Image (cartoon, rainbow, N blue to C red; front, side):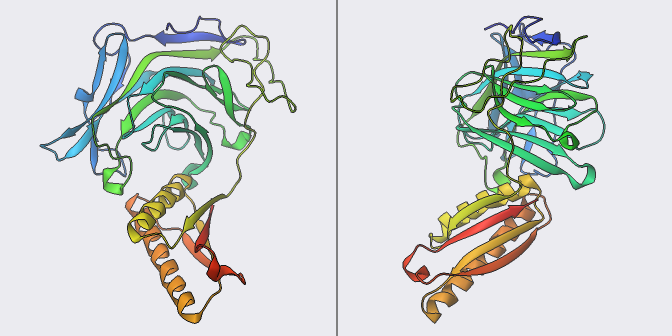
Length: 354
Protein backbone atom coordinates (compact mmCIF):
# COMPACT_ATOMS: atom_id res chain seq x y z
CA UNK A 1 0.00 0.00 0.00
CA UNK A 2 1.33 3.43 -0.98
CA UNK A 3 1.27 6.49 1.30
CA UNK A 4 -1.81 8.74 1.00
CA UNK A 5 -1.83 11.54 -1.55
CA UNK A 6 -0.43 15.00 -0.91
CA UNK A 7 -3.89 16.56 -0.40
CA UNK A 8 -5.60 13.65 1.37
CA UNK A 9 -6.53 15.72 4.45
CA UNK A 10 -8.58 18.88 4.20
CA UNK A 11 -6.65 21.86 5.56
CA UNK A 12 -3.27 20.09 5.37
CA UNK A 13 -0.57 19.57 2.77
CA UNK A 14 1.86 16.66 2.72
CA UNK A 15 5.31 17.84 3.80
CA UNK A 16 7.09 14.48 3.75
CA UNK A 17 6.52 10.84 2.84
CA UNK A 18 8.64 7.72 2.45
CA UNK A 19 7.87 4.09 1.67
CA UNK A 20 11.36 2.86 2.60
CA UNK A 21 12.64 1.80 -0.80
CA UNK A 22 16.27 0.79 -1.12
CA UNK A 23 18.45 -0.79 1.56
CA UNK A 24 19.20 2.07 3.95
CA UNK A 25 17.31 4.64 5.97
CA UNK A 26 16.01 7.64 4.00
CA UNK A 27 18.01 10.86 4.20
CA UNK A 28 17.49 12.67 7.48
CA UNK A 29 16.68 9.58 9.57
CA UNK A 30 18.90 8.49 12.48
CA UNK A 31 19.34 5.26 14.45
CA UNK A 32 19.22 4.96 18.26
CA UNK A 33 22.19 3.40 20.04
CA UNK A 34 22.98 2.81 23.71
CA UNK A 35 20.94 2.17 26.85
CA UNK A 36 17.50 3.80 27.13
CA UNK A 37 17.04 6.05 30.15
CA UNK A 38 15.53 4.25 33.12
CA UNK A 39 15.92 0.82 31.49
CA UNK A 40 19.42 -0.56 32.15
CA UNK A 41 18.58 -4.15 31.12
CA UNK A 42 18.45 -3.53 27.39
CA UNK A 43 20.14 -1.61 24.60
CA UNK A 44 19.43 -0.08 21.23
CA UNK A 45 21.81 -1.16 18.47
CA UNK A 46 22.08 0.22 14.94
CA UNK A 47 22.30 -3.37 13.65
CA UNK A 48 18.65 -3.85 14.67
CA UNK A 49 17.39 -1.20 12.23
CA UNK A 50 17.11 -2.70 8.74
CA UNK A 51 15.57 -1.44 5.49
CA UNK A 52 14.68 -3.95 2.79
CA UNK A 53 11.82 -5.26 0.66
CA UNK A 54 10.10 -1.90 0.89
CA UNK A 55 9.91 -1.97 4.70
CA UNK A 56 11.62 -0.52 7.73
CA UNK A 57 12.32 -3.34 10.21
CA UNK A 58 13.07 -2.86 13.90
CA UNK A 59 14.31 -6.21 15.20
CA UNK A 60 14.48 -7.45 18.79
CA UNK A 61 17.06 -10.20 19.34
CA UNK A 62 18.95 -11.66 22.27
CA UNK A 63 22.66 -10.78 22.37
CA UNK A 64 24.49 -13.62 24.13
CA UNK A 65 27.64 -11.53 24.59
CA UNK A 66 25.76 -8.74 26.35
CA UNK A 67 23.35 -11.24 27.94
CA UNK A 68 20.42 -8.96 27.16
CA UNK A 69 17.90 -8.17 24.46
CA UNK A 70 18.83 -5.54 21.91
CA UNK A 71 16.27 -3.65 19.87
CA UNK A 72 15.95 -1.03 17.14
CA UNK A 73 14.92 2.60 17.24
CA UNK A 74 14.97 5.44 14.73
CA UNK A 75 13.75 8.99 14.26
CA UNK A 76 13.15 11.41 11.44
CA UNK A 77 15.20 13.85 13.46
CA UNK A 78 16.06 16.24 10.64
CA UNK A 79 12.46 17.33 10.09
CA UNK A 80 10.44 19.03 12.81
CA UNK A 81 7.28 21.07 12.90
CA UNK A 82 4.70 22.54 15.24
CA UNK A 83 1.24 21.05 14.58
CA UNK A 84 0.31 18.78 11.72
CA UNK A 85 -0.65 15.19 11.01
CA UNK A 86 1.55 12.09 11.13
CA UNK A 87 0.70 8.63 9.81
CA UNK A 88 2.65 5.36 10.12
CA UNK A 89 1.56 2.07 8.56
CA UNK A 90 3.01 -0.71 10.70
CA UNK A 91 2.53 -4.05 12.40
CA UNK A 92 4.19 -6.28 15.03
CA UNK A 93 5.25 -9.86 14.27
CA UNK A 94 4.32 -10.92 17.82
CA UNK A 95 4.34 -9.99 21.51
CA UNK A 96 7.51 -9.23 23.43
CA UNK A 97 9.15 -5.83 22.95
CA UNK A 98 7.17 -2.64 23.25
CA UNK A 99 6.40 -0.58 20.16
CA UNK A 100 6.31 3.21 20.39
CA UNK A 101 5.41 5.62 17.58
CA UNK A 102 5.62 9.12 18.99
CA UNK A 103 6.27 12.82 18.57
CA UNK A 104 9.34 13.93 20.51
CA UNK A 105 10.34 17.53 21.34
CA UNK A 106 13.32 19.11 19.60
CA UNK A 107 14.37 20.53 22.98
CA UNK A 108 13.30 19.84 26.54
CA UNK A 109 10.99 17.12 27.86
CA UNK A 110 8.09 16.80 28.28
CA UNK A 111 6.05 17.24 26.03
CA UNK A 112 5.69 13.92 24.26
CA UNK A 113 2.82 12.46 22.22
CA UNK A 114 2.71 8.65 21.91
CA UNK A 115 0.10 7.78 19.28
CA UNK A 116 0.78 4.03 19.09
CA UNK A 117 2.39 2.41 22.12
CA UNK A 118 2.27 -1.11 23.55
CA UNK A 119 3.43 -2.69 26.80
CA UNK A 120 4.77 -5.76 25.01
CA UNK A 121 1.47 -7.49 24.30
CA UNK A 122 0.00 -7.70 20.80
CA UNK A 123 -3.65 -6.93 21.59
CA UNK A 124 -3.64 -3.35 22.92
CA UNK A 125 -2.38 0.06 21.87
CA UNK A 126 -2.24 3.27 23.86
CA UNK A 127 -2.21 6.97 23.11
CA UNK A 128 -0.51 9.17 25.72
CA UNK A 129 0.25 12.86 26.05
CA UNK A 130 3.06 13.82 28.45
CA UNK A 131 2.75 17.44 29.59
CA UNK A 132 3.26 19.71 32.57
CA UNK A 133 6.99 20.40 32.48
CA UNK A 134 8.98 18.96 35.37
CA UNK A 135 5.84 17.42 36.93
CA UNK A 136 5.44 15.18 33.82
CA UNK A 137 1.71 14.58 33.91
CA UNK A 138 0.09 12.13 31.50
CA UNK A 139 -3.24 11.65 29.76
CA UNK A 140 -3.94 8.13 28.43
CA UNK A 141 -6.30 6.46 25.96
CA UNK A 142 -6.32 2.70 25.26
CA UNK A 143 -7.57 0.63 22.32
CA UNK A 144 -8.03 -3.13 21.95
CA UNK A 145 -6.76 -4.21 18.53
CA UNK A 146 -4.75 -6.98 16.85
CA UNK A 147 -1.29 -5.45 16.57
CA UNK A 148 0.02 -8.27 14.35
CA UNK A 149 -2.16 -7.01 11.48
CA UNK A 150 -1.24 -4.04 9.29
CA UNK A 151 -2.74 -0.79 10.58
CA UNK A 152 -2.28 2.86 9.70
CA UNK A 153 -1.67 4.75 12.95
CA UNK A 154 -2.03 8.51 13.01
CA UNK A 155 -2.09 11.64 15.11
CA UNK A 156 -3.67 14.93 14.02
CA UNK A 157 -2.23 17.71 16.19
CA UNK A 158 -3.59 21.25 16.32
CA UNK A 159 -3.46 24.04 18.95
CA UNK A 160 -6.79 22.91 20.40
CA UNK A 161 -7.05 19.15 19.81
CA UNK A 162 -5.10 15.94 19.39
CA UNK A 163 -6.87 13.15 17.51
CA UNK A 164 -5.57 9.57 17.58
CA UNK A 165 -6.51 7.61 14.47
CA UNK A 166 -6.25 4.05 13.23
CA UNK A 167 -7.05 2.96 9.68
CA UNK A 168 -8.60 6.34 8.93
CA UNK A 169 -10.89 6.43 11.98
CA UNK A 170 -10.59 8.57 15.10
CA UNK A 171 -10.40 6.39 18.21
CA UNK A 172 -9.27 8.95 20.81
CA UNK A 173 -9.22 12.69 21.43
CA UNK A 174 -7.45 15.11 23.78
CA UNK A 175 -9.04 18.55 23.91
CA UNK A 176 -7.52 20.04 27.08
CA UNK A 177 -5.42 22.84 25.59
CA UNK A 178 -3.02 22.92 28.56
CA UNK A 179 -1.96 19.36 27.63
CA UNK A 180 -1.29 20.04 23.95
CA UNK A 181 2.32 20.77 22.88
CA UNK A 182 3.05 24.07 21.13
CA UNK A 183 6.65 23.49 20.10
CA UNK A 184 8.59 21.72 17.34
CA UNK A 185 8.42 17.91 17.46
CA UNK A 186 9.95 15.07 15.45
CA UNK A 187 8.71 11.58 14.60
CA UNK A 188 10.23 8.65 16.56
CA UNK A 189 9.64 4.91 15.98
CA UNK A 190 11.21 2.46 18.42
CA UNK A 191 11.18 -0.91 20.15
CA UNK A 192 12.20 -1.53 23.73
CA UNK A 193 12.35 -4.41 26.19
CA UNK A 194 11.88 -4.15 29.96
CA UNK A 195 13.09 -7.57 31.11
CA UNK A 196 14.89 -6.13 34.13
CA UNK A 197 11.55 -4.67 35.28
CA UNK A 198 9.57 -7.87 34.76
CA UNK A 199 7.53 -7.05 31.66
CA UNK A 200 7.85 -6.61 27.87
CA UNK A 201 10.44 -9.39 27.83
CA UNK A 202 10.51 -11.44 24.61
CA UNK A 203 10.95 -15.20 24.47
CA UNK A 204 11.64 -15.22 20.72
CA UNK A 205 12.98 -12.62 18.27
CA UNK A 206 10.22 -10.24 17.17
CA UNK A 207 10.05 -7.31 14.76
CA UNK A 208 8.15 -4.11 14.16
CA UNK A 209 7.55 -3.65 10.43
CA UNK A 210 6.84 -0.22 8.91
CA UNK A 211 5.48 0.06 5.37
CA UNK A 212 5.44 3.85 5.04
CA UNK A 213 5.37 7.20 6.82
CA UNK A 214 3.51 10.35 5.76
CA UNK A 215 3.64 13.78 7.41
CA UNK A 216 1.32 16.74 6.79
CA UNK A 217 1.64 20.41 7.70
CA UNK A 218 -1.28 22.77 8.26
CA UNK A 219 -2.26 24.45 4.98
CA UNK A 220 -3.15 28.07 4.34
CA UNK A 221 -6.78 27.39 5.21
CA UNK A 222 -7.55 26.10 8.70
CA UNK A 223 -8.81 22.56 9.07
CA UNK A 224 -12.59 22.42 9.62
CA UNK A 225 -13.96 21.83 13.10
CA UNK A 226 -14.98 18.25 13.87
CA UNK A 227 -18.62 17.30 13.64
CA UNK A 228 -20.35 15.95 16.72
CA UNK A 229 -22.45 12.80 16.81
CA UNK A 230 -24.28 11.47 19.87
CA UNK A 231 -26.74 8.89 18.52
CA UNK A 232 -24.87 6.85 15.93
CA UNK A 233 -23.11 3.59 16.82
CA UNK A 234 -21.13 3.26 13.60
CA UNK A 235 -17.44 4.05 13.22
CA UNK A 236 -16.69 7.69 12.31
CA UNK A 237 -15.84 8.82 8.80
CA UNK A 238 -12.20 8.39 7.72
CA UNK A 239 -9.69 11.12 8.41
CA UNK A 240 -7.54 10.21 5.41
CA UNK A 241 -10.11 10.93 2.76
CA UNK A 242 -11.39 13.75 0.59
CA UNK A 243 -14.07 14.74 3.06
CA UNK A 244 -15.13 18.23 4.03
CA UNK A 245 -15.19 17.60 7.76
CA UNK A 246 -13.04 15.93 10.35
CA UNK A 247 -14.66 12.79 11.83
CA UNK A 248 -16.55 12.78 15.09
CA UNK A 249 -14.42 11.52 18.00
CA UNK A 250 -15.12 8.11 19.45
CA UNK A 251 -13.49 8.84 22.80
CA UNK A 252 -14.09 12.17 24.49
CA UNK A 253 -12.01 12.05 27.65
CA UNK A 254 -10.43 9.80 30.26
CA UNK A 255 -11.15 9.55 33.96
CA UNK A 256 -8.62 11.42 36.09
CA UNK A 257 -8.23 8.30 38.26
CA UNK A 258 -7.45 4.72 37.24
CA UNK A 259 -9.04 1.88 39.22
CA UNK A 260 -7.41 -1.56 39.35
CA UNK A 261 -9.00 -4.59 41.02
CA UNK A 262 -6.71 -7.33 42.37
CA UNK A 263 -7.76 -10.64 43.92
CA UNK A 264 -5.45 -10.69 46.91
CA UNK A 265 -5.94 -14.42 47.63
CA UNK A 266 -4.07 -15.33 44.45
CA UNK A 267 -0.98 -17.54 44.81
CA UNK A 268 2.02 -15.35 45.49
CA UNK A 269 3.53 -15.71 41.99
CA UNK A 270 0.27 -14.68 40.28
CA UNK A 271 -0.27 -11.93 42.83
CA UNK A 272 3.23 -10.59 42.14
CA UNK A 273 2.47 -10.49 38.40
CA UNK A 274 -0.79 -8.63 39.05
CA UNK A 275 0.97 -6.11 41.28
CA UNK A 276 3.69 -5.60 38.64
CA UNK A 277 0.96 -4.74 36.15
CA UNK A 278 -0.47 -2.22 38.61
CA UNK A 279 3.01 -0.79 39.21
CA UNK A 280 3.43 -0.29 35.47
CA UNK A 281 0.21 1.72 35.38
CA UNK A 282 1.40 3.79 38.34
CA UNK A 283 4.73 4.39 36.60
CA UNK A 284 3.17 5.34 33.26
CA UNK A 285 0.72 7.73 34.95
CA UNK A 286 3.46 9.20 37.16
CA UNK A 287 0.97 8.80 39.98
CA UNK A 288 1.58 10.51 43.29
CA UNK A 289 -1.11 8.69 45.28
CA UNK A 290 -2.44 5.13 45.38
CA UNK A 291 -5.37 4.24 47.62
CA UNK A 292 -5.68 0.55 48.53
CA UNK A 293 -9.29 -0.28 49.46
CA UNK A 294 -9.64 -3.65 51.22
CA UNK A 295 -12.69 -5.28 52.85
CA UNK A 296 -13.11 -5.75 56.59
CA UNK A 297 -14.94 -8.89 57.74
CA UNK A 298 -14.61 -12.44 58.98
CA UNK A 299 -12.85 -13.86 62.01
CA UNK A 300 -9.99 -12.10 63.75
CA UNK A 301 -7.41 -14.57 62.36
CA UNK A 302 -8.76 -14.02 58.85
CA UNK A 303 -8.48 -10.28 59.26
CA UNK A 304 -4.87 -10.64 60.44
CA UNK A 305 -4.06 -12.59 57.27
CA UNK A 306 -5.70 -9.87 55.19
CA UNK A 307 -3.65 -7.18 56.89
CA UNK A 308 -0.44 -9.10 56.22
CA UNK A 309 -1.38 -9.63 52.57
CA UNK A 310 -2.17 -5.94 52.10
CA UNK A 311 1.18 -5.09 53.67
CA UNK A 312 2.81 -7.45 51.16
CA UNK A 313 1.05 -5.70 48.29
CA UNK A 314 2.13 -2.31 49.65
CA UNK A 315 5.75 -3.49 49.74
CA UNK A 316 5.53 -5.05 46.26
CA UNK A 317 4.11 -1.86 44.76
CA UNK A 318 6.80 0.29 46.34
CA UNK A 319 9.60 -2.00 45.11
CA UNK A 320 8.19 -2.47 41.61
CA UNK A 321 7.61 1.23 41.00
CA UNK A 322 11.12 2.07 42.19
CA UNK A 323 12.55 -0.64 39.92
CA UNK A 324 10.78 1.03 37.01
CA UNK A 325 12.74 4.19 37.72
CA UNK A 326 10.22 6.26 39.68
CA UNK A 327 10.05 7.36 43.27
CA UNK A 328 7.41 5.45 45.22
CA UNK A 329 3.99 7.11 45.39
CA UNK A 330 2.15 7.69 48.63
CA UNK A 331 0.15 4.53 49.34
CA UNK A 332 -2.87 4.80 51.62
CA UNK A 333 -4.80 1.78 52.91
CA UNK A 334 -8.52 2.10 53.54
CA UNK A 335 -10.55 -0.72 55.09
CA UNK A 336 -14.19 -0.89 53.96
CA UNK A 337 -16.74 -2.60 56.22
CA UNK A 338 -18.57 -5.49 54.59
CA UNK A 339 -20.78 -7.92 56.51
CA UNK A 340 -20.22 -10.74 54.01
CA UNK A 341 -16.57 -10.03 53.23
CA UNK A 342 -15.48 -13.39 54.66
CA UNK A 343 -17.60 -15.26 52.07
CA UNK A 344 -16.37 -13.26 49.08
CA UNK A 345 -13.05 -13.33 47.20
CA UNK A 346 -10.52 -11.09 48.90
CA UNK A 347 -10.52 -8.33 46.31
CA UNK A 348 -8.77 -5.04 46.81
CA UNK A 349 -9.27 -1.92 44.72
CA UNK A 350 -6.34 0.31 43.82
CA UNK A 351 -7.20 3.89 42.91
CA UNK A 352 -4.27 5.47 41.05
CA UNK A 353 -4.34 9.28 41.16
CA UNK A 354 -2.04 11.64 39.23
